[in-house]
Image (cartoon, rainbow, N blue to C red; front, top):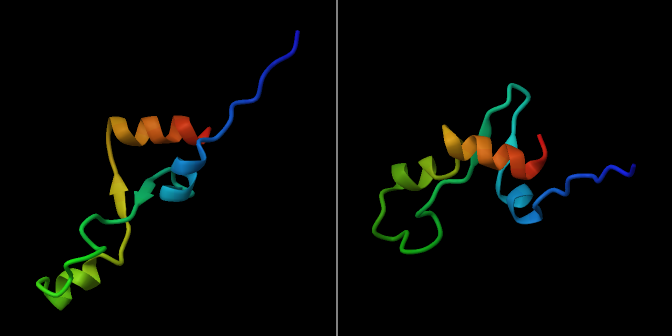
Amino acid sequence: MKKYKQKTRKGVARRFKVTKTGKVLRRRQNSRHLRRKKSKKTIRSYRKPVEVKGKWAKKIKRMLGV
């Protein structure tokens, strides 16, 4: 019998990254526009990726085939 390979969801692959330890990282929201009214400290904090936790992390890993 032929087994099928699981395909990765390309949209998810572009948006998320899985670290060696298995954490799922994403970019921060609110960093695209209307930046004038935000403080420089806030804008700097948008650069760092954030960890996805709980059920969402599990779902994303499944979509990535990890």
